[in-house]
Image (cartoon, rainbow, N blue to C red; front, side, top):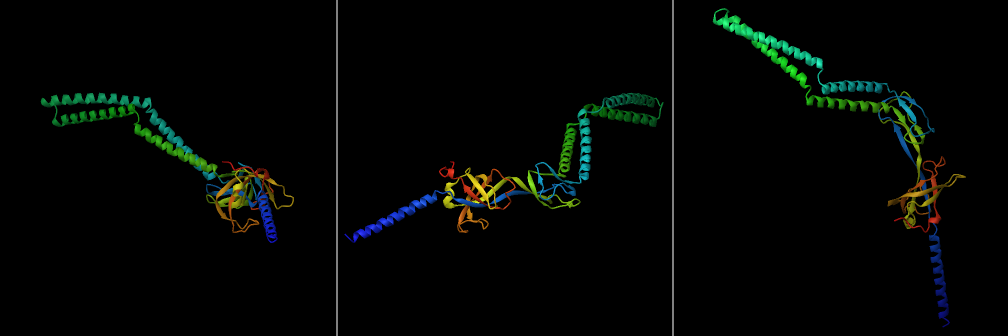
Length: 335
């Protein structure tokens, strides 16, 4: 019995230590994990969609710009000339289409009718002379040659009359539907060219797509640029994100929409508020830029945190520490 008591005591001690370790581990596990990441600010490279000579740059590196502000201009004279030429072609084809749709002028039709009446009279006179020559030829009053001449004049008069009548019919009928369709197609083509010329003229002005800070001014006035040549690099003010990483054991304890606090290493740096906006569905190895207490070769999941109150204190690539809001410890992920 004396030998059993020490053995029981040892078992009780081991059980107590195991219970303490278990509860201590569970207590530590209730603490929200600390995440580490870097500031991720979007940048955009700005250039002209059309080639040309750079005439003005209105901002320099470090300047702040607002969305819609003019940042640079190209020499627009060639594009203004193209626009004027395209406008003239459109005006010309619109007039041609109107002519096709309206038809011929009444004065032209009246003139054609007068010509028909004139040639009808000439044809009647030529027919009468031809018949008389036929009768005189039978009585030997005219020669065969005179009779043939009268017949030729009669046939010519009939042909000229037919030509005048056909011309009058064309003028009265107006233009064919195919002519009108062709005129409409030609007009549509030139209107498209006019729209392109107008767009190219507008593209000689470079405007800021969003609020931001100019990081790089890559060109100077007078440079001859090709389409798409970088002129400015703009760092956008919004959105400002944090690219952070979470270990797989902690993955089930966070969810999109969870509130967080972000701190930088700057002295006196104020905390920033944010919320988790995206969690990657794919695991990856921890990037070398992320300082964590875990092994760098461990698998993590990338997440994006949206800053609610960004300012100039956040710079591209700056390392940050992310503390999850402990009030959301028991909050379950949304379904």
